[in-house]
Image 1 (cartoon, rainbow, N blue to C red):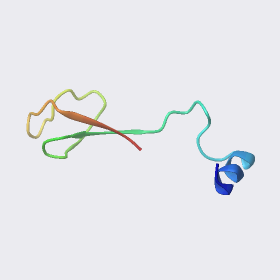
Image 2 (cartoon, one colour):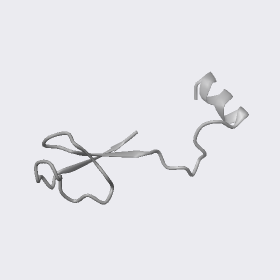
Image 3 (spheres, helix red, strand yellow):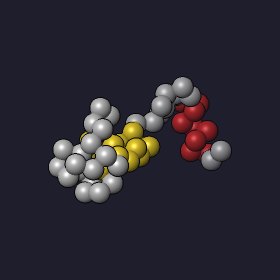
Length: 54
């Protein structure tokens, strides 16, 4: 653990231990940003959706 990580944990800012990082959903074919509910891209019709953990 770096000194910065230790400092952040001591002062209590940032993500908690149980908090999940945000996820970005994107069409792998055209790059359009999608919502979690989208199963197909409304722009190109592809069903290949990438889930990118931020």
